[in-house]
Image (cartoon, rainbow, N blue to C red; front, side, top):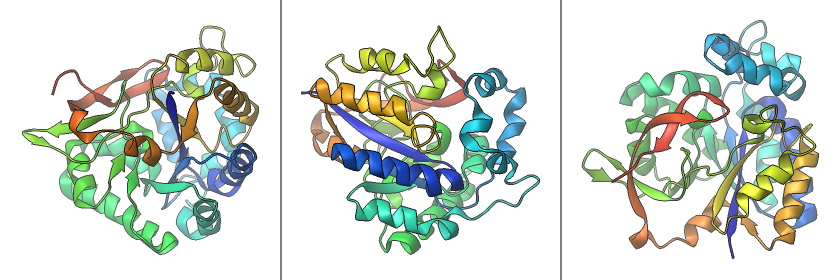
Length: 299
């Protein structure tokens, strides 16, 4: 029976305060567990608007209603408004997520800073950003994190090795077609990568005639291929105006007998001895602007 891991990226203060509780209620109705990956430091979402000059970014903003999904206030954080500290302002919804039995982990410290700069930064910069997030996670949850999923699927080689050094046991930082162990130089790392295998709603809506009314049917067709998958949703989207789409997905997967759970559940079902070893690098994904961390062919 195929398995789909539900990975929830929580990017903003609004997503943590509003989207996360909405998703917790929805998942509770279905008696499901998911992995919630939190942004733990400042919300500087407004600074992302400088990406407007990147190929494809403006088109994505137009077709996915960024303003209505994220809210005007969020889009001013870090520019006209100071960026609020998400981990300080929204620790309670984070703890409520863990109390409800969901898996919790690290998404990032500063989402925009990591997404826009990590690919070009050195080991010291990368370690500092990861350590800030790890330390804040410990303050919020009283324990060390074990799951990491990179903001915007942006990584560098240092980040993969630092995950192992910092004690992470499961990671979902990349896009790909199945789980693997990353090879960095001559080193094969022990932290398995469970890449996002399915497109996200913001990559699909507005493309090839897809809209909120039919995108769930399209995603169900893609996902019901007999393989295991990782589906990344966003607290700001599926926990907001696209909650009905997520409800249709949950119902469709349930009707098809798919096992839905956490990244940890999927990782526990793996045989580490049979995992492929893959090099990692950057590549493109349809519907997503810029380059993302991807699994490359060959080990």
